[in-house]
Length: 405
Image 1 (tube, rainbow, N blue to C red):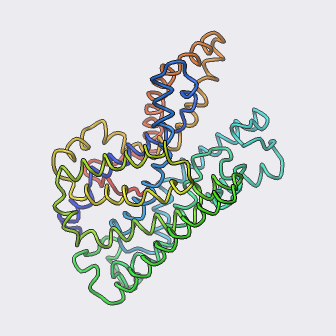
Image 2 (cartoon, helix red, strand yellow; image 1 turned 45 degrees about the horizontal axis):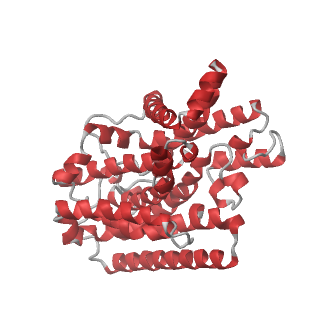
Image 3 (cartoon, helix red, strand yellow; image 1 turned 90 degrees about the horizontal axis):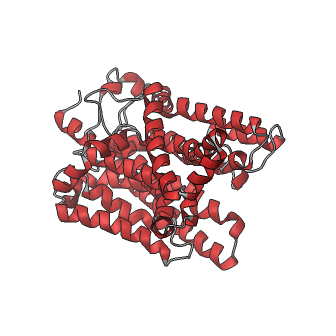
């Protein structure tokens, strides 16, 4: 049976809010029209800050690895993967169908499908990669950004889920035969003795070595791409790269979860540490303004994101109290829906307005700041509506951190 201590641990509202903030960061990064704004405030805000919101993808991957261990419970593989896919695939599939339909109607619009004509072999291949959620493993922008660009993120996540089923039990000591344990589905594992058994220690060390090698390899790839000026593959290799996302970032999250119970810093985190973690994370992001090298890409965010997870682990104090505010919790609750649907809003708004009035469209395009505010509000409302329609609202008292996406 789930203990009160475990329930408290699984209801980390700070993580939920940080997830919502990260989703907003990714949304901000797509507001590129602000760069051309005649208003210095909006152009400067995007140029020096908002466009770097895409780095928040690293937070989602590391958090997913953390939650794989943090919320683990025994089950059969079928039950485990079904439970995971039920949380995301209905929306993923509907988003893909809508994008394909729009692309077909618009005869292969370059914005939707990277310029591949509807009905071509490449078009069908991109659909297959979208249905299977594996498109990020194809290192061509015409595929990994096809139809619905943000969904590339799911490729690494789904493959990690499969790997996690076989790895996490060894990390937490769940080496029992699930078929022989009638109560396995309801049992959450005891974290007090997480690293006591030698096999567990060996497993944690193995994951740590793989993670370290992945980060080292990614750093080497970034240097090589800069030296050779390989601009064609730079986006995939330094940002999308699902192999690094899995074996680097997701594995890092698992390592943090394995050790966090033994960290005094995590259990007794002060308000000052929480503030420092937030400021440090923003500072590292802002340094991209002066760091043009590929080295300042996904792999560099391991330290600030790890510090965020550690400092907000106890979910206590005034700073954590701010994150527990209803607006931030609401953003956390709709974070996945916002991530998956915001592209339709920011791309569709000018089109919809143009149908009503050409002059109104010109006004909207000219007033970039107003367009941004309207887009933000509509994206949040639309994400909430999607959440309601798909029946994904959490029941009262359920875990705020149970969905590792």
